[in-house]
Length: 286
Image 1: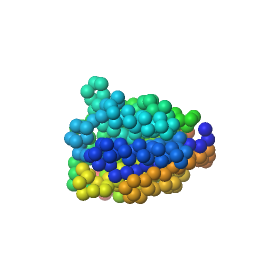
Image 2: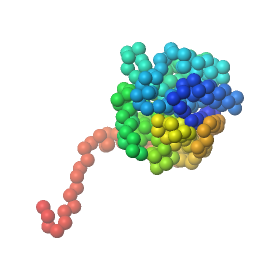
Image 3: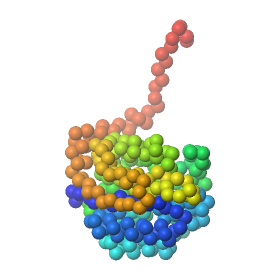
Image 4: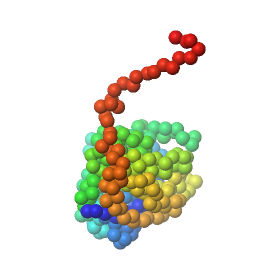
């Protein structure tokens, strides 16, 4: 496959799981009608509340919510990536998992978020590690011969993960998110474009967006796609419900990597060495 059509989505997610699920299924159908090979749904799109509320509402892989989303994928005959859901495993542990549904509606696999959002921004404390357990395994997805790297939200601040995915063959990097409004305003576009530029890859990032004073925390929106040269291909702004199908020309990745072969220039052995400190003393100080 030399091209891939990805459905970029955004909506105002609330604590109402059924409402959120209705919106998710609607956008899957809309994107598929526009020829999407893959539809990317945002992190916490099915339930956005406080940490305590989201943990209490953790879903199961064989539960009715994900079964309905799988049915939507099957009806649309397209791959769907639920960008992040609090998933209760058979081991009783909650993880933040990007669940992949194949075009037949079955669960093809998933990625457990590696970097958990333990931070204090906008006057709020976000202690994700108190809710979920971090993953430890990078994951690639293959769709129609295209290699896609899976990440979730806060992962975008850790370029090491993105470089590992690109080095393993990823041409497209997914960053589904529920980015806070404060950090989004400051960093969202810059981080996404940086990950695209340094890996000469497409970056596609679906998002939730603020819509009510009752939200557990305001999220930034601006679901965005960037090209391998760092150019913004789409930005859904602050629309409370939106989608756009973007055609990605994978030959652009090859051309960009040929012009700027950054992946061939990576030197992990050098980076692993302890830095040497040089002292530039002044005024005769020892």
